[in-house]
Image (cartoon, rainbow, N blue to C red; front, top):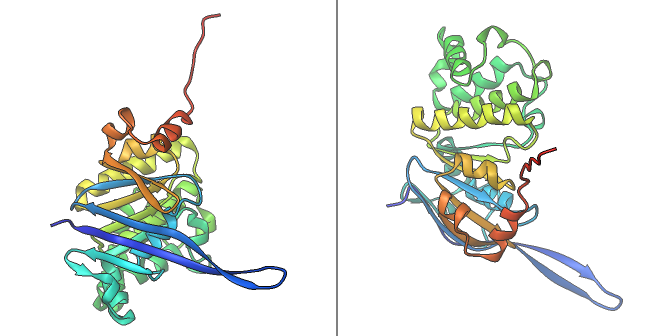
Length: 268
């Protein structure tokens, strides 16, 4: 049985377009019949251009956006049938890393407060425990941060450090699934490689399952076991990362691959 299974998932939005004499409803099919299976410990790279539905799909999996139809089955349980209260409890098992860590971190909270709050969601008894500071320090060390800075605020860190904090916050409730939505696109290339290597190490250490969302096929190839190519709300191609990269079958995948810049050195 797959750890995460999407069955004919649809997420539609309705907007009213006003004409000269009448009003009509327009349906935007952001996610249009997506079916996927992800095995435990696997990293799925979800790639496609802006507006193809990647982020809407991730929000639907996270149950932040209600699906129009279809199923999201995590570890044998259909999340789409759960009431809101149970979803809040179940969400400890699946967390999200957002593109902009500065926007996703509360600027009024220290790093200690941010991580301690997330840790206590899974372990509420630690809230009044003397070991909470050590738990925060251990979590910071896991993502390569110095615990001496836990009393600082987000604006006192670099972009790469803030993304490590965001990763630590996602790890704090001890989730089984991580959805990373463009987590390196706002970072310098040298920092991107550090974050990608960190995510790979965490997958191996914690046996995490991940969905890594990006518009950059070269980045997705580096981190992913399998790749799903999305266009206009549909999955156009799916397979092993190296197979999709070297032997694409869909014309859209070929166009994405042709857009990857290549360094050409000519003799002078």
